Length: 316
Image 1 (cartoon, rainbow, N blue to C red):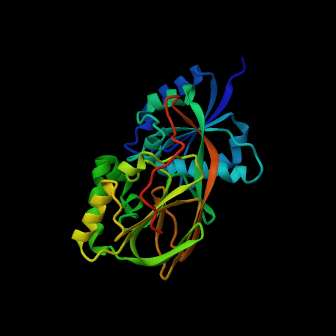
Image 2: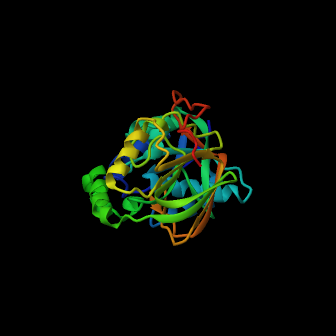
Image 3: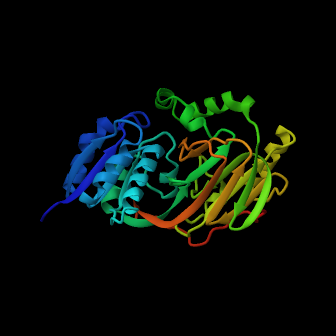
């Protein structure tokens, strides 16, 4: 029987640089599973995107190993090829980063060998992807407080300390938090104000933390979740609003939330955005669109994606 072809793209520096030491056992596992494996270690930023866009149609399956950034680049490569009219293969994912939010949402195992077995034994899940201007994101586009932590934290610190490295970088940024005056259009409804944080997400976990109202979110319904936090009058007011959010209450005073397929942001000043933990530019105007079920991702057979999403009462 002729083996299937697999393009295995991996970031050797992700997480605690664990992929190289497990590489032989992973390739051996995939080979025993019936695949002829082609390896490509990423060399620089956007390398995964370019390699996958150029070569993915020569393979039956693409597997990406790395953190959320590597996953983002891999999906960008698939979508760029899809936009050229090609039929793209499904994507397997081996999470090897520091946080791995996307894997958490789809219940993909965090350890490399179980994740590899999921690639061989799992099923394709048609997952929504976000379009941010001319770019893409898999699970979150955000601006404001602490959103630069993931891409400003040195890789060496991430490898050494893991998640605490993000917390330390976040504490360092506390004195620099400031609001952005924005007009936000959500499926035709407009709100305006000064916001210290904004997030459009398609995930049950963001920044490594799983919030209660995230748990019933569907990643295939063609909708994203919007969360905005207005500028508080004090840190105590901000803490009170966050506590209410975690209790699934609706703190109308500071929190704006909604669910929609299309968003438009207009900012008076340049606002730095992060896409899946990577720097996403500083646009003053951006449109975000849900590309429903744009990519097939291999997930465990036990993964259940709810068809209904329960969110805070929309206040936009």
